[in-house]
Amino acid sequence: MSGGKPRCLDALHLDKLTEAVLREQAQHFGGSPEEFAAQSDAAQIALVRALGELREPGHEEIASALPASTGPWLEPGLLPGDFYACEQLLSDEEGDKVERIREFARTEIAPIVDDYWARAEFPLKIIDGFRELGPLSWADPHSTERPPSNLLTGFTAMELAHADASIATFFGVHSGLAMGSVSKLGSEEQRLRWLPQMIRFEKIGAFALTEPHSGSDVSGGLETTARRDGDTWILNGSKRWRTR
Image 1 (cartoon, rainbow, N blue to C red):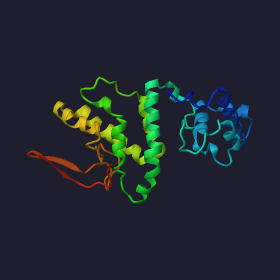
Image 2: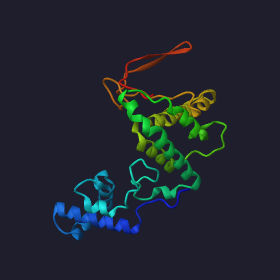
Image 3: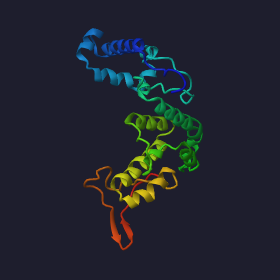
Image 4: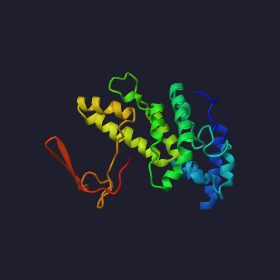
């Protein structure tokens, strides 16, 4: 991975941060930090440590234990929220992919997305960028490329959401819910027909779940039906929203 060693919480920062959290929690609930530590489990400490409010007013002691920020939130560089330096677990090849996604999100998505959000429009121009980035080449039925690891998948989602959560949802639905359904449930003919086009973002997968009387209760709450009629399907129902 280029760019040098990731900026993360080293052992010293981690110890300082844990001590600061314990002192603050002890002051809030009463007692000494040692007594609070004895009654706390690691999950509670980790949760407090990970909260975004750590850098907010009232948490100055905790914030001082964190590594200094490298600059504005969308400047080049590693995300300050990777407290446990999970990015170091990526292979060099995976790290390079994350850096390309990060740069794409920072330079192509972040500068334009607020304007599209205000107009309730989807920025179709970024689809060309996704196509050039080629994050789904592994899904081609004829490809010998290995699927991304869970860690790489997670960092891809995080980097896109860092620029805009809606774009991260668009990519997740297209690559996961839509392409995943075709890949796992489609026939060989359907996979060969649709996946190559979806990999190149020539066809975009969409997802429509929420209905007027139900949300994600798919097992018994959905009312929309699909009925085969000759060579076509008839969809009958209504949806509150769908992805692009």
